[in-house]
Length: 230
Image (cartoon, rainbow, N blue to C red; front, side, top):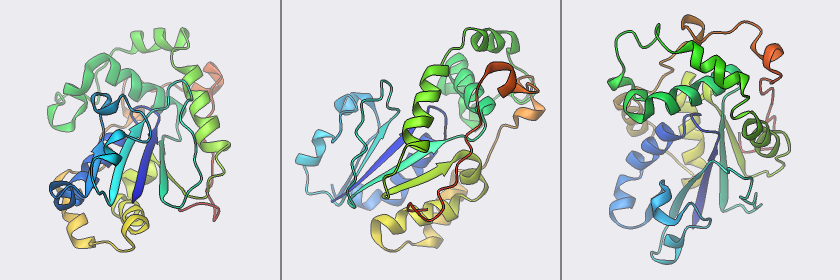
């Protein structure tokens, strides 16, 4: 059985990543050959999920943000870690802020207001940054799962790279799981979900010049090279 562990800093594309995989493995889900542990209500995000013992599965998907840095980075060819993150520290902090402020209802592209790109609560965002909210978890996540991660069975999925070519990255990951991929069907699924980057922070009220220098954060500069599954 393959285990796919989606380890993500919040608002790094993990929701759409899961939806694409669920659609792609719809038949296996229906036949109890694939299971998606995508909510805390399933098992409290314990790993491995208890559902691995209930079915004769080919694949189990498990999501975790690893708050508290408790998830083990197990080196095993049957355990695939997909690390989802954003290179831009500003975009990562802001995406989490917008989600926390407006909730899931308005984060989905089809629910967004017409002025979503050009409106916002900049003052509240600056206040959150001044309090350094989420800075500790951001630094801990990137250090553990990006810079210190030496697990060769890891696929690094940076948000902008993912949004610029979702077919390439989803194909790569499905090939790791199955050894092959139905590219035509996968492409149709990606089109159905309209996968692309929908928010340009440079065009929004949340853009901050010299963000990293001002707030003491760093963009994630990392090249997986040939040491990982990329």
